[in-house]
Length: 167
Image: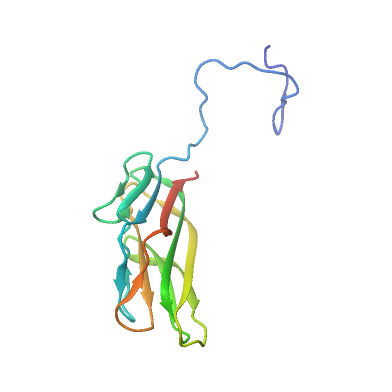
């Protein structure tokens, strides 16, 4: 059936339509990736530590680097970036932070504070942002804690780094 009516605010889809050829002007959601870390990582007190997300769950366009632990899109656009960290040893009002860095500068962070207990508790912290990224920009995740030396960032599905193009 031929397209019969175009309204000022879009296409009237009151009828069925068959399309041939290419549909243009539609933005995709790639590049897209999800990475986790395969081993616990030590975070020392007061020091921002680059999280070693070394395991790809998926990477649509090969833009995530598992050795540098960073995402470089090579396609300009707006990207949704989200990450989560977990820690099993946070107590006594200690703080666990997560930082999203663009080109080495912090652009977003999240934090969680431990309770007053002297025993260990499990905590997670996450944060998200929409970033304008150019072809050579890169994004990394850092963790920071305030309890003491040798506090581990846990591994696996409780810790992740995800990004995808939205526009």
